[in-house]
Amino acid sequence: MAIETVLKSHPRKTLIELHSFVSCIEACIQCAETCTSCADACLAEERVQTLRKCIRLDLDCADICRTTARILTRQTEPEPQFMRILLDVCVTMCGLCARECETHAEMHRHCRICAEACRECERNSRQLLAELPGGAGLAH
Image (cartoon, rainbow, N blue to C red; front, top):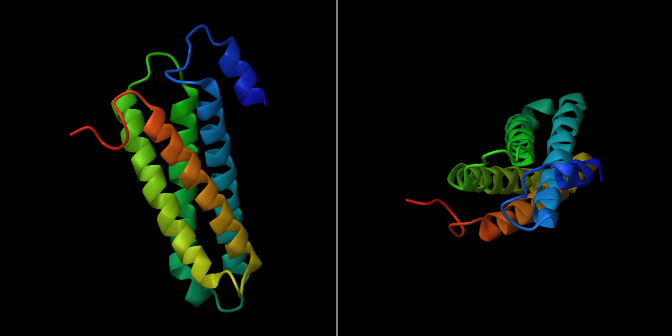
């Protein structure tokens, strides 16, 4: 709610419909925090060595999602091509992290929750990517 309120008060209007930006930003923030928590929970598991890849992807995904949210929040002189590149990376990273967490989801509830957050962020990022000027995907 605070993100939407401050973006509405910004003197510059978003490149596209505000709701799409807010949904994506919120999903990215939620995913970043969930991935960070999942990595921490993985570290506490007895067989942590079997979760190394999951931990690494969780932390990488958290960093990408956090950065994506921060860049999308900035509305002064946005660069749509850069946003598309960043959203492409976010979609890819969320997909990778979700797939890895899904392999552990039956054994570890935190991995199931993380996979769900990653899939939600992936959907929201893909949606915003499709709506940005210049069309979906990278501009080559």
